Length: 304
Image (tube, rainbow, N blue to C red; front, side, top):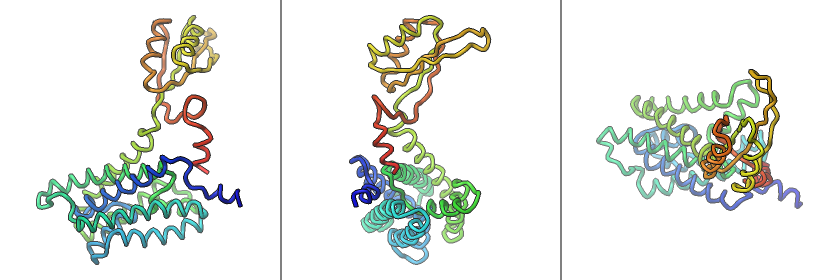
């Protein structure tokens, strides 16, 4: 019994609740305040909800809920109850927020659409809100359902890449939006989808993760001195790698060390003071787990 509870535990950190709620609300703002009033069709259940709202005057959030319940059943069948529950939680919260915001604004938004420039603004800001919100929901460990589930099922049985399948299904929804709501709206929808995808990537790869730098330091004679100062002044450790110069054929020591962004300048100064001729390669560290950084166990538990 205890083992089953552990398997079904959906959240491992309090911050994940914050990401889920704020992310769902932010995406809902993008859908109800910008997309729908501007006749912009996003991908997935959101886009289907927009089309049904304008064709049949059915509440967008309600349509999204129905679509995602169907997809929830599909997800559970192919990927298990844990995956299905996470998809249902994220998509349900998004649908509820869309319905609430839509009821408060009557899906009229906050811009004057007699000025066509405001449609472009809706595509831009709607894409930012939608993408940033989805990114936060994904950081919580949940997802917003939609065509992601369909794409994963198709990829499970075919050799097609996930991104290709997802683009295909979202493309069908956008084209349908163009047929029912106008070609101009379809073009704005493409802009919105591109901005949304960039916002998702920024939140997932840049917000709260890319906070450290990895350095490879090649010093002819001062690797030990630099290492000692890293320990004494930065309270960090590292690894000395052994290599051979391909031109000189001489053995060289390479210091590999990872530091938070705020310590990069101090480390650079230390290297310069010890060996101004050192060769240094600095690369972003997407995510650093272990001693001195985020707990490896917490991240591992989050993915289970």
